[in-house]
Length: 494
Image 1: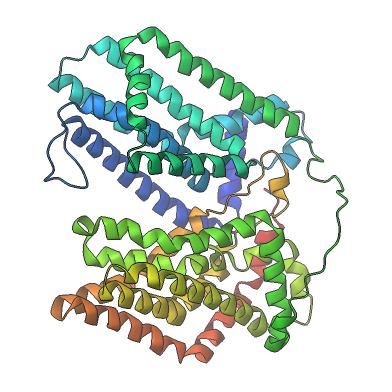
Image 2 (image 1 turned 180 degrees about the vertical axis):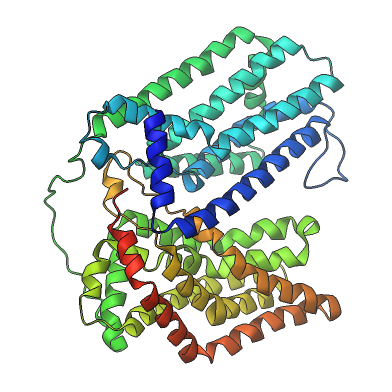
C-alpha cells in the first residue's frame, strides 16, 4: 500500500499540469475545511433543536426524533449528490497490471481511498457534535446512542460504495431520483408521510442496539460486491473489445455557414452526442440553470450579492463545465492536430461560439423561471448572461491554456474509468471569474440600487463583446506559448 501511495505522490508532483492541480488542491482543501466547520456547527445547532435556514422558527422539541424522521431523505439526497460530485477511485491500471503487484492490492488501495471522502468525513463531523448535544440536553442512553451512531455511519459508507457501482449504471440513479421526487410529491399532497416509516426504522437502531448488525452486515456485503465488481472488470484489455454496430454519419450540414470553424464545431457536436462523459457534462451544464434557486430560497441568509453568484452559474454553467475543459476534450488527438495546417483562431473561435450557444440557451431557459419571482431577478439573469458572454467566455478559454488536464474518453470503458460529468478542478478555476462581477454589484448596489448594480454587470459584459479581436490575439498567443508543455502533459500516462 505504501508503494502505491508513493506512486500517487510522484505522479502528482511530476505532472506537467502540477501548477494547476496544486492551485485546485489548495482551493479544494479550503473548501473541505469550510464545509467541515459548517458540518460541526450545524450538528450543534440541530442538536439544540434550532434551524439553520430559519433561526426565528420554533425550536424542535425532540431533535433526536426529528433527525430520524428525515434520515430517509438525507440518505436519498446523499446518494444523488455522491453520484454527481464524488469521484470514483481512479487508478492508472494499465502500467500496474504489467507489474508483479497483486491485482487485489491495487483494487483494495483504490477502494479504500474513498473511505476518506469528504462526504464520509462530513457525515461523521455532523453526527458527533449532534449526538453530544442531544445527549447533554436529554435523557438518551450513551451506550445506545453509540450503537445508533455506528449504524448511521455504516449506512453512510454503504452509500459510498454504492456510488462506485452506480457510476456505470445511470439508469439506477435516475430511478432513485424519480422515486425521491415521487416520495416528496406524495408527502406534499398528504397522500403518504414517509417520515413516519423513517422514524420507526432509524429509531430502532437506538431502541434495539443488536440491530446494528444489519447495517454492518450490509456494509460488508456492499464492500465485497465492489471488490468483486472491480476484480471481474480489471483487465488490461477491458474496453478494447470490438463491438459491431450500425455506422451513422452525423453531417451537421447546417454548420457549413461557419466556414473553417465548421469542422471543429461538427467534432464537438459529435463528441457530445457519442461520448457519455461529454454528454453528461453538457447536460450538467444546462442543469445549472436551476442553481440560482438555491440562493433564491435562502436569500434572507445570503443576500442579493450571492444571488448574482448563483445567476452567473445559472447562465454560464455549460461554459464553465464543458468549455472549461478546452482543449482537454481533444487531448487524445491534440498532437495530431498540431501537425496539421490548423489555425488557432478557427479552433478557439469554434469553442467560443459553442460556449456562447450554451450561454444563450441557458439564459433563455432561466429567464422565464426567474422572471416569476420579479423584474429584478429577470434583469439579473439577462445581465449575468451578457457578462458571461462578454468577459467570462474569454477568461474560460484563456484558462484552458494552463489547465492541461488530460481527458481520456476511453477510460470509462474500464472498471476504474471515469464517466462523471463533474470536474472540481474546472469549477474551482471559475471562482476568480466570479469575484469581479460580485464585487462590482456589491459596490454599485451599495451606492445606488440593486437594479443599477445588475445593469453595471451587464454593461461590463456588453463592452467586452466589442474587444473580441484584441482579446483573441492574447488568447492565441497564450496557447502558442503553452503549446509544447500542453503536448507534453497530454502524452503522460500516469
